[in-house]
Image (cartoon, rainbow, N blue to C red; front, side, top):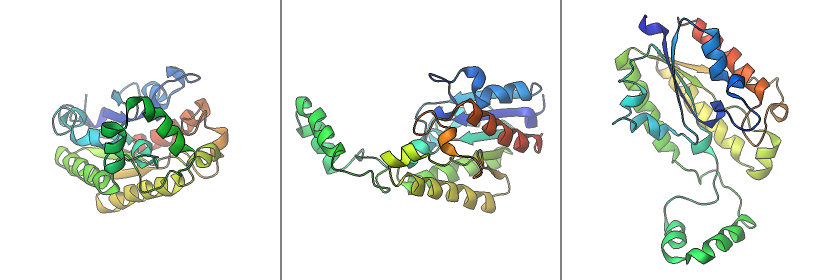
Length: 230
Protein backbone atom coordinates (compact mmCIF):
# COMPACT_ATOMS: atom_id res chain seq x y z
CA UNK A 1 0.00 0.00 0.00
CA UNK A 2 1.25 3.47 -0.86
CA UNK A 3 2.25 5.71 2.05
CA UNK A 4 -0.29 8.34 1.02
CA UNK A 5 -3.03 5.81 1.84
CA UNK A 6 -1.73 5.23 5.37
CA UNK A 7 -3.71 7.54 7.65
CA UNK A 8 -2.88 7.97 11.34
CA UNK A 9 -5.59 9.50 13.55
CA UNK A 10 -4.55 11.24 16.78
CA UNK A 11 -7.64 12.27 18.70
CA UNK A 12 -9.15 12.92 22.11
CA UNK A 13 -12.47 11.94 23.69
CA UNK A 14 -14.49 13.72 20.99
CA UNK A 15 -13.88 10.71 18.73
CA UNK A 16 -14.44 7.95 21.31
CA UNK A 17 -17.68 6.04 22.02
CA UNK A 18 -19.52 6.89 25.24
CA UNK A 19 -23.01 6.44 26.70
CA UNK A 20 -25.39 7.35 23.88
CA UNK A 21 -22.68 7.14 21.19
CA UNK A 22 -21.88 3.75 19.73
CA UNK A 23 -18.59 3.07 17.98
CA UNK A 24 -20.62 2.83 14.78
CA UNK A 25 -21.74 6.44 15.36
CA UNK A 26 -18.23 7.88 15.53
CA UNK A 27 -16.53 9.83 12.77
CA UNK A 28 -13.59 7.41 12.95
CA UNK A 29 -15.87 4.47 12.15
CA UNK A 30 -17.40 6.39 9.24
CA UNK A 31 -13.91 7.20 7.93
CA UNK A 32 -12.86 3.55 8.02
CA UNK A 33 -16.04 2.56 6.17
CA UNK A 34 -15.72 5.39 3.68
CA UNK A 35 -12.08 4.68 2.81
CA UNK A 36 -11.72 0.87 2.77
CA UNK A 37 -8.63 1.09 0.58
CA UNK A 38 -6.71 3.04 3.22
CA UNK A 39 -4.73 1.74 6.16
CA UNK A 40 -6.32 3.77 8.97
CA UNK A 41 -4.52 3.66 12.33
CA UNK A 42 -6.58 4.93 15.24
CA UNK A 43 -4.77 6.39 18.30
CA UNK A 44 -7.37 8.13 20.51
CA UNK A 45 -6.94 9.11 24.17
CA UNK A 46 -9.49 10.56 26.56
CA UNK A 47 -8.21 13.89 27.79
CA UNK A 48 -5.34 13.76 25.30
CA UNK A 49 -3.27 16.91 24.81
CA UNK A 50 -0.48 18.04 22.51
CA UNK A 51 1.99 16.71 25.08
CA UNK A 52 1.36 13.31 23.45
CA UNK A 53 2.96 14.57 20.25
CA UNK A 54 6.35 15.04 21.88
CA UNK A 55 6.37 12.24 24.48
CA UNK A 56 4.67 9.00 23.38
CA UNK A 57 7.11 6.30 22.37
CA UNK A 58 10.05 8.55 23.15
CA UNK A 59 9.85 12.05 21.69
CA UNK A 60 6.47 11.29 20.11
CA UNK A 61 7.66 8.54 17.78
CA UNK A 62 4.58 6.42 18.58
CA UNK A 63 2.50 9.06 16.81
CA UNK A 64 4.65 9.61 13.73
CA UNK A 65 8.06 8.08 13.06
CA UNK A 66 7.20 4.48 13.99
CA UNK A 67 4.28 4.52 11.50
CA UNK A 68 5.47 6.96 8.81
CA UNK A 69 1.93 7.76 7.60
CA UNK A 70 1.23 9.77 4.49
CA UNK A 71 -1.53 11.65 6.31
CA UNK A 72 -2.14 12.45 9.95
CA UNK A 73 -5.53 13.65 11.17
CA UNK A 74 -5.08 15.57 14.42
CA UNK A 75 -8.16 16.26 16.55
CA UNK A 76 -7.57 17.64 20.02
CA UNK A 77 -7.45 20.88 21.98
CA UNK A 78 -10.39 21.06 24.36
CA UNK A 79 -8.54 19.42 27.26
CA UNK A 80 -5.66 21.86 27.25
CA UNK A 81 -7.65 24.94 26.23
CA UNK A 82 -10.47 24.63 28.75
CA UNK A 83 -10.31 27.21 31.58
CA UNK A 84 -9.84 25.49 34.93
CA UNK A 85 -10.68 26.27 38.54
CA UNK A 86 -7.24 25.20 39.73
CA UNK A 87 -3.74 25.27 38.30
CA UNK A 88 -1.71 22.08 38.33
CA UNK A 89 1.26 23.81 39.92
CA UNK A 90 1.98 26.83 42.07
CA UNK A 91 1.27 27.80 45.67
CA UNK A 92 -2.38 26.78 45.71
CA UNK A 93 -1.61 23.37 44.22
CA UNK A 94 1.09 22.90 46.85
CA UNK A 95 -1.30 23.97 49.61
CA UNK A 96 -4.07 21.63 48.40
CA UNK A 97 -1.94 18.54 47.95
CA UNK A 98 0.88 18.94 50.45
CA UNK A 99 -0.50 20.95 53.38
CA UNK A 100 -4.29 20.65 53.43
CA UNK A 101 -5.47 17.46 55.19
CA UNK A 102 -7.06 14.99 52.78
CA UNK A 103 -10.27 15.07 54.82
CA UNK A 104 -10.65 18.79 54.06
CA UNK A 105 -9.68 18.76 50.38
CA UNK A 106 -13.22 18.04 49.13
CA UNK A 107 -14.67 20.82 51.27
CA UNK A 108 -12.06 23.28 49.97
CA UNK A 109 -12.82 22.38 46.35
CA UNK A 110 -16.57 22.78 46.95
CA UNK A 111 -15.93 26.18 48.56
CA UNK A 112 -13.86 27.37 45.58
CA UNK A 113 -16.38 26.10 43.02
CA UNK A 114 -19.05 28.38 44.51
CA UNK A 115 -16.83 31.47 44.45
CA UNK A 116 -14.42 31.22 41.54
CA UNK A 117 -14.87 31.60 37.78
CA UNK A 118 -12.87 29.43 35.38
CA UNK A 119 -10.43 32.02 34.02
CA UNK A 120 -8.98 31.78 30.49
CA UNK A 121 -5.36 31.94 31.67
CA UNK A 122 -5.80 28.99 34.03
CA UNK A 123 -5.42 26.02 31.66
CA UNK A 124 -3.92 22.55 31.91
CA UNK A 125 -1.10 23.48 29.53
CA UNK A 126 0.31 26.96 28.98
CA UNK A 127 -0.46 28.20 25.43
CA UNK A 128 3.25 28.73 24.77
CA UNK A 129 3.88 25.06 25.56
CA UNK A 130 0.99 24.02 23.31
CA UNK A 131 2.47 26.05 20.46
CA UNK A 132 5.92 24.55 21.07
CA UNK A 133 4.50 21.01 21.05
CA UNK A 134 2.66 21.68 17.81
CA UNK A 135 5.63 23.25 16.08
CA UNK A 136 7.86 20.34 17.07
CA UNK A 137 5.35 17.88 15.63
CA UNK A 138 4.73 19.89 12.46
CA UNK A 139 8.42 20.12 11.68
CA UNK A 140 8.89 16.39 12.27
CA UNK A 141 5.96 15.74 9.92
CA UNK A 142 7.77 17.78 7.27
CA UNK A 143 10.89 15.64 7.67
CA UNK A 144 8.75 12.50 7.28
CA UNK A 145 6.90 13.77 4.22
CA UNK A 146 3.60 13.59 6.13
CA UNK A 147 0.64 15.89 5.49
CA UNK A 148 -0.93 17.06 8.75
CA UNK A 149 -4.68 17.68 8.72
CA UNK A 150 -5.65 19.62 11.86
CA UNK A 151 -9.28 19.78 12.94
CA UNK A 152 -10.37 22.97 14.59
CA UNK A 153 -12.08 22.70 17.95
CA UNK A 154 -15.82 22.95 17.38
CA UNK A 155 -17.69 25.84 18.98
CA UNK A 156 -18.85 25.61 22.57
CA UNK A 157 -22.55 25.17 23.23
CA UNK A 158 -24.56 27.28 25.67
CA UNK A 159 -24.33 24.65 28.43
CA UNK A 160 -20.53 24.69 28.33
CA UNK A 161 -20.47 28.49 28.26
CA UNK A 162 -22.76 28.61 31.31
CA UNK A 163 -20.20 26.51 33.21
CA UNK A 164 -17.12 28.19 31.77
CA UNK A 165 -17.83 31.70 30.39
CA UNK A 166 -14.39 32.10 28.77
CA UNK A 167 -14.27 28.76 26.97
CA UNK A 168 -14.98 30.17 23.50
CA UNK A 169 -12.19 32.72 23.92
CA UNK A 170 -9.72 29.89 24.44
CA UNK A 171 -11.22 27.81 21.62
CA UNK A 172 -10.76 30.75 19.24
CA UNK A 173 -7.15 31.17 20.37
CA UNK A 174 -6.35 27.49 19.75
CA UNK A 175 -8.02 27.57 16.34
CA UNK A 176 -6.17 30.78 15.49
CA UNK A 177 -2.89 29.00 16.24
CA UNK A 178 -3.83 26.22 13.80
CA UNK A 179 -4.65 28.78 11.13
CA UNK A 180 -1.26 30.47 11.61
CA UNK A 181 0.52 27.15 11.21
CA UNK A 182 -1.43 26.36 8.03
CA UNK A 183 -0.21 29.64 6.52
CA UNK A 184 3.36 29.04 7.65
CA UNK A 185 3.73 25.40 6.57
CA UNK A 186 2.69 23.99 3.18
CA UNK A 187 2.08 20.49 4.55
CA UNK A 188 -0.43 21.64 7.20
CA UNK A 189 -4.16 21.74 6.40
CA UNK A 190 -6.93 23.04 8.69
CA UNK A 191 -10.47 21.67 8.61
CA UNK A 192 -13.59 23.20 10.20
CA UNK A 193 -15.50 20.10 11.36
CA UNK A 194 -18.80 21.88 12.07
CA UNK A 195 -19.57 25.15 10.31
CA UNK A 196 -21.22 28.17 11.91
CA UNK A 197 -24.55 27.41 10.24
CA UNK A 198 -25.19 24.57 12.71
CA UNK A 199 -26.54 25.06 16.22
CA UNK A 200 -24.09 23.43 18.60
CA UNK A 201 -26.76 22.95 21.27
CA UNK A 202 -28.54 20.55 18.92
CA UNK A 203 -25.33 18.57 18.32
CA UNK A 204 -23.92 18.15 21.84
CA UNK A 205 -24.81 15.45 24.36
CA UNK A 206 -23.05 17.28 27.20
CA UNK A 207 -20.84 20.36 27.47
CA UNK A 208 -18.59 19.36 24.58
CA UNK A 209 -19.11 15.81 23.21
CA UNK A 210 -21.13 15.52 20.02
CA UNK A 211 -24.06 13.31 19.11
CA UNK A 212 -24.34 10.98 16.11
CA UNK A 213 -25.32 13.83 13.79
CA UNK A 214 -22.29 15.81 14.95
CA UNK A 215 -20.03 12.85 14.19
CA UNK A 216 -21.50 12.64 10.70
CA UNK A 217 -20.69 16.31 10.14
CA UNK A 218 -17.12 15.67 11.31
CA UNK A 219 -16.84 12.81 8.85
CA UNK A 220 -18.18 14.88 5.97
CA UNK A 221 -15.60 17.60 6.57
CA UNK A 222 -12.70 15.20 7.12
CA UNK A 223 -13.51 12.97 4.16
CA UNK A 224 -13.45 15.96 1.82
CA UNK A 225 -9.94 16.84 2.99
CA UNK A 226 -8.72 13.25 2.73
CA UNK A 227 -10.08 12.79 -0.80
CA UNK A 228 -7.99 15.76 -1.88
CA UNK A 229 -4.81 14.12 -0.61
CA UNK A 230 -4.98 10.45 -1.70
